[in-house]
Length: 211
Ligand SMILES: Nc1ncnc2c1ncn2[C@@H]1O[C@H](COP(=O)(O)OP(=O)(O)OP(=O)(O)O)[C@@H](O)[C@H]1O
Ligand SMILES: [Mg+2]
Image 1 (cartoon, rainbow, N blue to C red):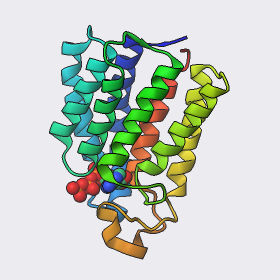
Image 2: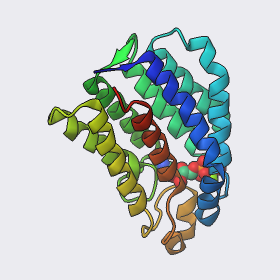
Image 3: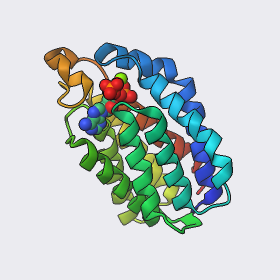
Image 4: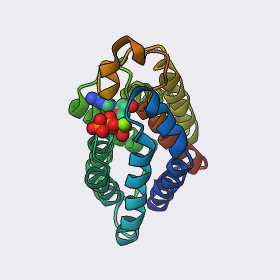
């Protein structure tokens, strides 16, 4: 089974909806340890993406992902714009020319995407960032693929790992981004970026459940 171009387009559209639905939740999380703009940033970025999708809806998956990434970079700003922009641009570079993705293809795209975020933001596991959700999600997906799991099962395991990583940010003291200015006071709050990462990956698992 594979993830088709249409599946990819459906995921991106669904992400725009999920982030809009969770705008206040993400804002609330960012108001505790940041500047209360994460919900607005992500919603604005993906609403802009929605306006760009029709122009690339007949293009390959690489072009679709690159367009998403470039749109996020140009419309989101702050910390999360360049980071999520890099995520999608790197996924796009690895998916260039592809009309569908196998489990291994999505694993490779996710790996390039996560590596791109780590290179750009220089955060490591435990710094209380989106990396705390992304890295476990990537590892769980790769492990499932090695065990010959279906894409659907591999995605489910990947999302479970992202959720655990997201929840594990609660007690952490932030070492990157705006939340790090709070020092010890950042502990006791869930990281907004790890939360948006979980929502985005959960949306992929739900959209691609039958792949
Ligand atoms: N260096 C980094 N590496 C990875 N993720 C990061 C890094 N810095 C911040 N983040 C993530 O970005 C999230 C905050 O995103 P947000 O959209 O609120 O941008 P911001 O920090 O408010 O940007 P700015 O401070 O420039 O306005 C954090 O919750 C964290 O997950
Ligand atoms: Mg913020």
